[in-house]
Length: 131
Image 1 (cartoon, rainbow, N blue to C red):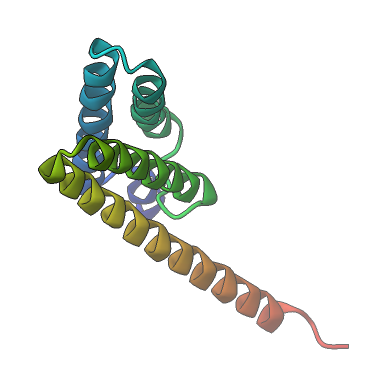
Image 2 (cartoon, rainbow, N blue to C red):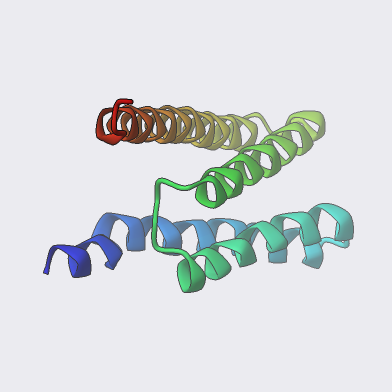
């Protein structure tokens, strides 16, 4: 039963994935409708990676999930720069906040993955037989 609960996605994670899909999907479609094809495809692809991660990975403490969040950080920063250069300060601030959120997520994931690897390596050292 414990193994089953480890493989399930929590409600908060489901909400986060759906919010990311909507955020990047709607923004990507908005840019595509405004003939901003390069940024539109980049943002839309970021939204599609959410669908991919939801279908194929359930572990939130792995390098793939951290890499996807790095991608979201970069894409949201690109959107922030776009709005900043266009002079839309409110949307720029919103995307800056989103960028900071993803950056904090990446830092926390990196720290957790590092802590888990450290714990695993310490337990392997303890379990090794002494000559």
